[in-house]
Structures are given as C-alpha cells and as structure tokens.
Image (cartoon, rainbow, N blue to C red; front, side, top):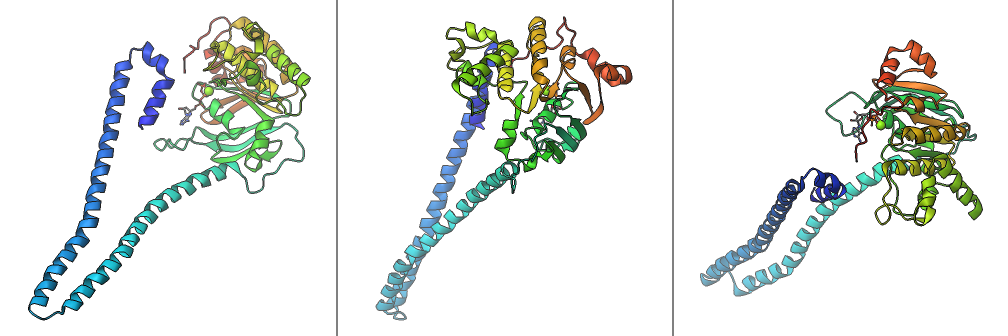
Length: 399
Ligand SMILES: Nc1ncnc2c1ncn2[C@@H]1O[C@H](COP(=O)(O)OP(=O)(O)OP(=O)(O)O)[C@@H](O)[C@H]1O
Ligand SMILES: [Mg+2]
C-alpha cells in the first residue's frame, strides 16, 4: 500500500503541486508509514513471544522432570542410571523434534507462497497461451464481434456489465467509427480486439479466428493501436515511431516508413527538433506537447503496417486545421486497412465508411452517418453533443 501511494504521488506530482496538496499527501504518507512501522513491530513482538514459547516450554518441562527425578531418586523409587538415561534420550530427541517443528513452519509458509505463485501463473497462462495457438489460413482483414459480453472483474458491486451483447462486423478494409456517449464503453470495446482484456463471454474474431486461439505475439503484430492516453517511451522519435514496424525491412525502407508515418500524422515538427528524429523524448529527454505526443502515437500505429488498426479518438488533442490535414492523409492510409476508430468529433466520423452506435452495452445501430442521422434519435443526440468543428467542447485533462 505504501509503495502504491508513493508511486501514485510521484506520477501525479504536477497535479499535487498545482493543487497545493503537498502537505496533505505527505501526511497521508506519514500515516501509512506509521502503520507499516506498527505492523512490523507487532510482527517482531509476535515472533519473539512465539520463539520464547518454543524455547521455554521444553526447557521448563525438562526442569520439572529433573526436580521430580531427583525426588524419586532420593526416596529410592528411581535409579540414578534411569534418570541419567532419561535426560540423555531427551537431549538426543530434542534436536530432531525441534527440526520437525521448524520444517512444519517452513512447509506452511512455503505452501502459501507456492499457492499464490501458481494462482498468478495459471491466470497468466489462461490469458497468454491457448492450448494450440493457431494462425488463420487466410488473413482477410475482417473483425467480428459476436455476442460479446464484458464486465470489469473488480466491479463486484454493480452487476450490470459494461458491454452486454455486442454484435459487430467490420468488413475487410472497411473503416468503422464507434460513437457513443462518454462512459458508454467505447475504449473498453477497443481493448477486446488486441485481447488486452478478455471478453467475459462471446467471441472476438480477427481474420475469422477467435482471439483466444491466436498466438498472442502474432495477433498483436496484426493489430496496431493508438489509445486515448498516449504512452511514449524514453527513446528517440525514431525509436517510438518504428516500435512496431515490420522487422524484415532494410535501413532505407525503415527510413521511408518513418518519413511516411510522420507525414501522414502531420508530425513533421519532429524534423525541427534539436536532433531531428533522433531527439530523445520522454523522461530523459524533451517533453512533447499533448498534440505532438498524440501525433507520434498515431504515426507509431501507422508505421506498424497492421492489417487491423484500432484508434481511440486519435485526433482529440489537435487543433482543427491540423486535424483536417491528418484526416485527409489518414483517409488514404485507411483505404486498405480494416479500422475501428472511436470518434468524438464529427470530422472523425466522416472518415468512416460506416458508423456503429454504442448504447447501454449494445450496438444500437450501424449505418452511414447520414442514414443514422435521419433514422436514429439517440445518434442525433450523441452527434449534437459532440463538439463542433470550431468549438471544442471537451477539455483536455492532464492524466
Ligand atoms: N479498468 C477499469 N476497471 C473498472 N471499470 C472501468 C475500467 N475502465 C473503465 N471502466 C468503466 O467502464 C465504463 C466504460 O468506460 P470506457 O473507458 O470504455 O468508456 P468510453 O466510452 O471510452 O468513454 P470516453 O468517451 O469518455 O472515452 C465506465 O463506466 C468506466 O467507469
Ligand atoms: Mg474512451
């Protein structure tokens, strides 16, 4: 708990400082540290009294035995030899008995640790290795969700699953926009495609094969993602963009891929950095702005040359002009790639061939933007609450 508290405060140091919550967080830390200290002291005390008992009880019994023995020898009911023999045997037996006790203690604590170990390993194996990982015969680029249900495991209180019954088919090469009110489960749904979360029930099919049967490594080279909260690594721009790039490229091809990805994502600013695309970013290097980070993340997804592209609102931090440019270029890239894209802006919706409307854990309607606009009340409501081109309604919140 203490380690978690420290980690969170370090991550959120800017927010803590900005809100002047330093003393409060410090007080919280002190209280937790104190509680840890008390736990440790209690543990030491318990251990001490346990050891005392373990050592004192046998010794006391031997002491009593000696007294009784002496009394019996004195009144002639016991020979001195028997008394000596009794203590000789006790001394010999004491060692092994103590050893057995220790062994028993060790077995118990080891068993607890081992059980935990296997529990964790089993859950990892559950997720990571299907009995026989298969690769589909034909990679047609289709994505299909059939009767998919999903509930977060730690939401024991609410029984309503986030995704109740999702049926959605994205045809090969098609771009599908996912629209829904905030908190409707769009990001959750995207996570199921590269199997970052596992559907509670139902099937997620990529190229016609259930993601549970896929070799995970293989699956994730097929799919590229760009999420809402962009994570970039502390390395060069080049390293970040080419993170998922195909490995069988020569130097020149990699260079071309980098240039193209940066171009599509309108991230040409990279060339103007002090050391161009070799500039280090992240913790040990240059800090990028929110919009710059987002464009690098988008370039990374494009450079992976995936057959399925999963984008969670990839243009949210861009200004309208830049967004327009990205949209224009992205359209060319998306032409041959099956894409699922969460849209918070009408302009992003326009990128899509079809739009799926997520509502109450179900796909409420699928169709072209125009069709949904004219037929679906909820769609009109959602689109109306999406921000206008020239009037951003979403506020960038620092994470
Ligand atoms: N890791 C998690 N554990 C438990 N509940 C979660 C988790 N992530 C999301 N949720 C819940 O799932 C619901 C859907 O969240 P999700 O992020 O999928 O919404 P969204 O449609 O992407 O919203 P937005 O448009 O704001 O990005 C929310 O009610 C949220 O509280
Ligand atoms: Mg989301």
